[in-house]
Amino acid sequence: EKEDEAAADEEDDPHKRIHRFFKSLLRQWEEDLLSRPDHLKRTASGKNETKTLKQCRDYIRPLFKLCKTRRLEGAMMDHILNIVKY
Image (cartoon, rainbow, N blue to C red; front, side, top):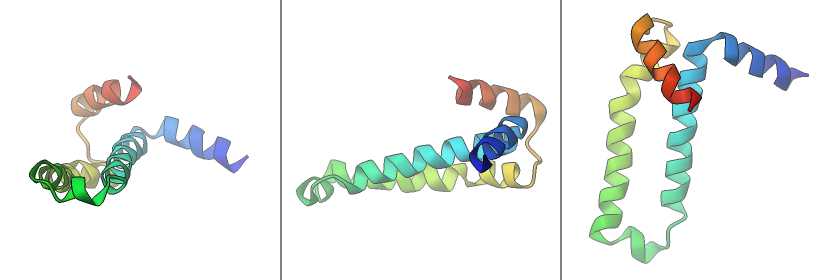
């Protein structure tokens, strides 16, 4: 019952939907990187993959702040929601 309410709330609140979508993608990406064997993590490409994740986290932080404060511009929100839906 609570899950149904949370899902309905998320559908009604595009800011939450966007925030949760990108947060979950970052979490999945991080889990994928953490599950790599140590010898792959230590290679140059392995280190670059980890740096890329950290850079993306830093770059997406302003979007998360706009979503949390509900100040995401309407046109931008519509375009991002199109990404989230597909």
